[in-house]
Image (cartoon, rainbow, N blue to C red):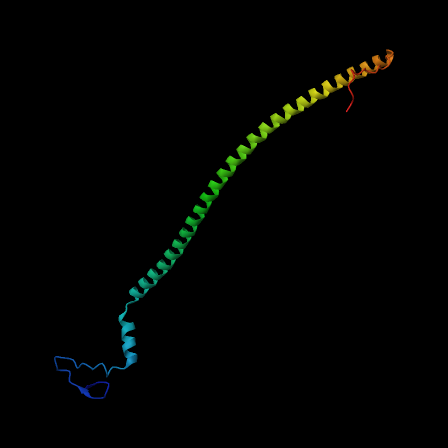
Length: 149
């Protein structure tokens, strides 16, 4: 049985070399199909796996970057907390000093009040004693010839 090509011409099967077509003679659809047909299924699966792994690694890199930024911000917060704690300790020690000074002032005030009460009692006693004793009449002082100016 004779063999025919795409144009309908008879092909000689006894020839050692096959008949090659020019690139212009090959339809474009068959070129695309031949390229897709030449790629093996394993290559397609491996390429898809590599793309998926690249996407996953990019996402993980972004997460790591975000976590590093959070770590830096947390270390800054830790430093601020330490400085605030130091200030708080200083404020507490100052507060204690002020409390001690206030208690000393209160004690001095109480002592002063007690002394005032004692002095008021003594003044009252002196007034009562002065009322009981007759007071001498006031004697005008003589001036030695000096005039008041």
